[in-house]
Image (cartoon, rainbow, N blue to C red; front, top):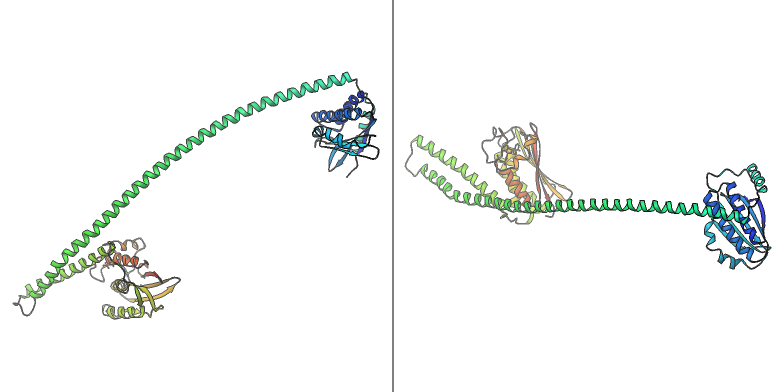
Length: 448
Ligand code: ADP
């Protein structure tokens, strides 16, 4: 800390000196660069302290100094010779202290000391030793005015301050008006937004109601379709079975012999009726699965046995010598599932793979992947174009031209297989490269 450099000293003896100190304070403030309002504050604080000290009847020494304790400041020390006055003075000066940055009252060596300071503004001129000397010289030539002069100055200051207060009050009123207007704007915007939000909400609610209604209608339509399919296919089964039986009777050795032409025609009737029966059976299966009437019969499935059975029943279908039919050993021994439904799905996929593969291989495998068991049926057949890989799961859809190898089909096998896998709690997906082959993957949870 740089101890403050004294600028000027004076004494307080009689009341008149209070005016002189007040004037001097303002003058020192001006010279060190205090702003006009701060000069008035300092002068007012000085005259209040001076008034109280003069009332004690003792002489007071007043020292003005400037220095820097981090920030440059003007300090004034007032010291008078009465001891033990500090507490009373401090209480009396509590309000006055607010006019300056710091005000301290304490008992010093010779008597009571009041010390106050006010920081200089950042734009105040630097107080170099030369500048300090100049200020000292100017203060030495300072002639104190009469109390009347001081009264005039105070009046002017009062008028200026009142003007300033009025201007500030006007500013405040204007700001308040602006604020009120902004508030009104904000409220209007808020109302508009909440109206819009309410309208949007009403729209969304209406949309949801419509959606609910539509999905009820959809469900009803889908149930009606399943019921229709189930009934029609059920009703068709009996007459078609009868046609097949009658055809068999006609061409039976025990019946009257037919002419070769009649025999050929009866064979045609029997073949068509057999196709129709398989379509009707497929439709009935699908309708049952869709109507949710298929309840899985959960048990511990021995995968080795299932694979063995598939190997045995499908090998006769894989008649092309150019195609290797491989059923690998399952990497997982057991699975909780419905054995009949699972075997039906795998048989369906393997039959397709055999149907659509001219050369290479058809392969069935089972591996464990995380919490699932993945069954893959991989072939090196015709493959399916990417844009049709979801369509083949639609009822009756067949990839155009894909039956060149295999004869007819119904287009119901994959939608049915996907339904069954869904009922078993899993998923059926395909990946395929036209010309390279396809892989159908059935993922089933280890614990459904
Ligand atoms: P279907 O075999 O009776 O025609 P699916 O529903 O089983 O009916 O199959 C639908 C269509 O998907 C088939 O007609 C065929 O075009 C295509 N597809 C199915 N599996 C394969 C496969 N492994 N390779 C190539 N195309 C296939």
